[in-house]
Length: 220
Image (cartoon, rainbow, N blue to C red; front, side, top):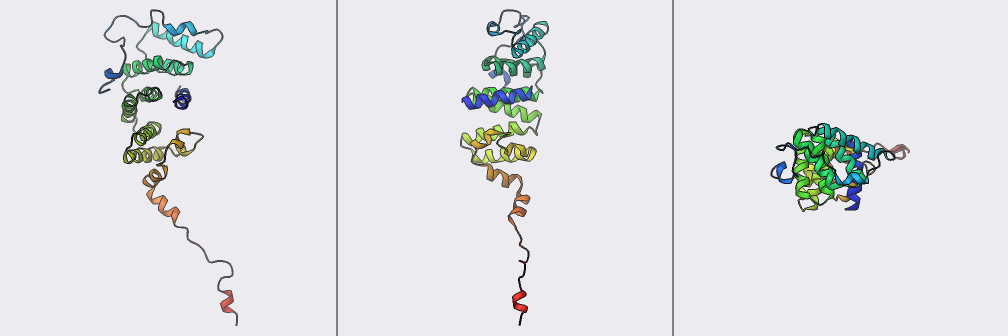
C-alpha cells in the first residue's frame, strides 16, 4: 500500500458509486455556504513562506475562497494535498473537481489513483471507468483497470485492458515509466492480443544461406 501511495504521488505530480454522489463528500452545490470560508484543519500544518508546496496549497485555497466553482483549482489542490500527505482531503478535492466538470478526465483519473491507494477499489474502478469514458485513449487508466481486474481474479478482462493500454502507449512497458508493470503476470498475453500480426512476424526468424554453404559439394 505504501508503494502504491508513493506511485500515486508521482503520478499526480505529473498530472499537475452508482453515481458520483455515492462516493462524494458533501459539496458546495446546493448550499450557499462556501466550504473554504472557515478554517480548514490541515492549514495549521502549512508554512507558505518556507515551503513552495505549502504556498501552492495556500494559493489554491485563496482562489477557492473567492470562487469555489473552479474544477481545475480543485484538481491542483488535490494533487498538492496528496503530496503533502492528506489523501482523504485530496479525494474530496478531486470529487469536487468532477462535480464541477463531469468531463474533466484528468480529475477522474486522479480520483481513481487516490481511491486505489486508499483501498477503495470499487470507487477507483468507477473513477477510472469515467476517465476512459471521457478520454477513451487514456492508457494509464486502462492499465490500472487491467491491474485491478488481474488482482481480483478476472484475467480475461485484465488482458483486454492491458492490450488497449499498450496499444495507446508502449512506454507503459518500461519499468522506469510504469513501475507497476512488475505487478502483472499477464503482460505477455496482453502483448500478443495487442500486436498479433507483429508478434507473428517477430517469431518468424528466417535464416539466410550460411557463408560457404554448398561450396564443399562443388569440389571434385
